[in-house]
Length: 274
Image (tube, rainbow, N blue to C red; front, top):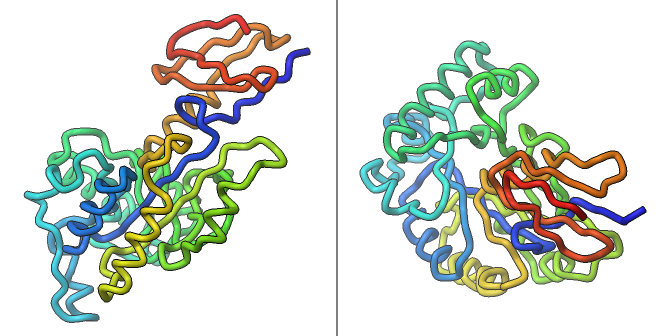
């Protein structure tokens, strides 16, 4: 029997990197410029205008990116939900959570002109009722604020924990990500944070040094959160014959698998004899 594994990212790469940032603060402008400079991709979780009342009450007068700038600023990245008013969803009725997501989706989709299908939980506040409401409103993934320090895919994309917060990126963690793999699996380095947490030039300098280390590698796939989800769903949707001699890819996305340790592309919509 042939040895087959569904363990490769786009273009047969063994590792992927994604970034995820919340709230849409004005510091996103500098952050996106650095992402573009080092050829990495991010997902930006945004609320509706007027949600910042909570922040003004707590921390004064923060500045946010204007919705008029979203399409230009976040071009090549992903715009994603964060709740219309940034609520503690765990402590609100399920119907309210649904309205928070639906209003947020409508607002963002009218700007970006594509389906918004993911989110991050405001304050990382979630439970089973919140998850059910978010799925009911079309969310296909949702990020928490938890950190694993690992590079595995989540068991449930609606409870997606990151590898680390950007403040916890270290050379040692990155080297472990790049180290030879004892067992083959799809490694994902997932970084999350808020751009306003770069409080000083020293913080921005550390970020740029981290991006120099992380970005621009030909052996890594740099993707948004939803690109990760779409690819994994396409990979999991492959249909094999009982003897795994033939495989059908019902999705429109080309995916890669290992066949006897060799990388094989399975084009979208095609049936391939292995």
